[in-house]
Length: 579
DNA sequence: GCCGTTTTCGGCCCGACTGTTTTCAGTCG
Ligand SMILES: Nc1nc2c(ncn2[C@H]2C[C@H](O)[C@@H](COP(=O)(O)OP(=O)(O)OP(=O)(O)O)O2)c(=O)[nH]1
Ligand SMILES: [Mg+2]
Ligand SMILES: [Mg+2]
Ligand SMILES: [Zn+2]
Image 1: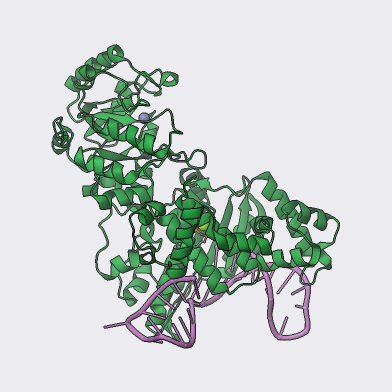
Image 2: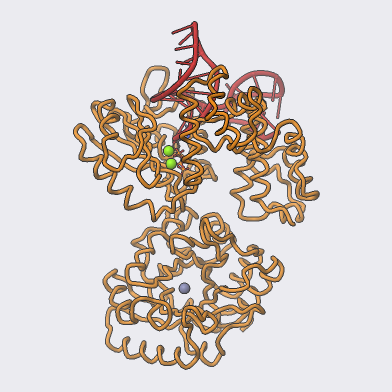
């Protein structure tokens, strides 16, 4: 099995956990975690970089030692340091860290004192009241451990899709804003950064009496459990399991608190180090020169004092945004207002829930200039995919509809299946009648990388191909991406004038943020497609825009920001290099 | 283990909440 980036990252994470349980130097532990994060953030496979003879020490947080460890891991399939660590400590110990309230020191104590190496053994020991015999552990801690283990086995620590968290988040925010004494309130954390999933909700609040508000928020009707509640922070668990952190600060600290609570953690650390460089200190209360406040009422003030422009939350992942800001090199990010239409739409002709006319009306309501209709092709039988005859009839329907419409153009397309051999599911005679062809892979998802890449490249060589929908096929939390050599896919996209989709379905978001960023950097045109199966799903567009922003994209990087005339030119046949 | 317009050695972000503690360690954000 070839070593993937996520294998390397996971191995470093596990190693860091074991080292920490073994009481290693915390900064060394941190170094392994930083390296894991760097590797995970790469769109390109590390093994491709090594094969190309590239120097891994160019990557942040990777020095000579770790570069060597990675190279040997990729070569042998074993991370020697991890093997050594599991000789010292049972690997199962790291599972204890999933229990809220158990960190490396307690895991170590449980192992040394009671020989515990698994969650089950810990539950037994707690039920037998043996945990409280250890120094540092009392009755309450023992009870909490049992409670948290129960919770852990009930719902494993899965993350929530951003779109699924929105309703709860916004209603909770509105409720908090109505509390007496609340001045401002915002949802911060990964939610504000628009990550595709959120681990919890983080809400920052300003108030003249923070302690009173911190207590008051525990009285929301959906609170299942108050995990902790102090003078300035309260942590809740809602019915349904979602956790909420609420941080309340005085007015003057709102900007600094919002910055802190928006994160990411690594962005915070990077900015705090920058503050140190000025001889200052940055925390959630402000930016300080000894006891003098330098900034803090707004985020802008904090960045400005550090000689930086305000950085959009979507970029705050410590992926080069501070350096870009410093060089005045931040992109002007695409905005929902930039979108002029949707090019990936389904109707009742296949598995959509609304007719062609209804989808067109919904597009008009959204103020769009164009709507591209792209039902499935015949190979997708469960979706009642179109054959040439049925597609022909749909094209006639579109002609009739276009006659009637004066403020919206319906474009003719089809989401044509890319078959196992890379050929297309419908004959050229019908594809030639479309404004553009979308290609998508829906079957044989398990092909090996070489074959899968070859298949996609073959389809991309078709002169009519213009968009590849959901290129990796991943479903968040459910299905891994197909194995692809994205670098070659990007090259083919450029050579053949093909746009790669950021599919805006909340569980797809495919390409993801980092791959879309790499595509753009390579010179590829992106397109944000809702893949709407109903009028309401046209509003998924904003989820696609969120990820486009996380990918550092500007409007000019995205096909469906173009006016219809320009769009038609870009989609015109004969633009393929070969044809 | 990494890294350098303060450093190639000596730093590495900074603070809240809880429980067990008799002055603070551990965990988490
Ligand atoms: N300075 C600093 N800030 C932190 C640290 N941990 C968390 N934060 C800040 C930045 C985070 O975005 C914010 C909320 O913490 P969370 O644990 O909820 O993380 P976040 O929301 O980013 O991701 P999530 O989706 O919840 O896993 O608190 C830390 O160790 N240091
Ligand atoms: Mg969070
Ligand atoms: Mg949180
Ligand atoms: Zn589709």
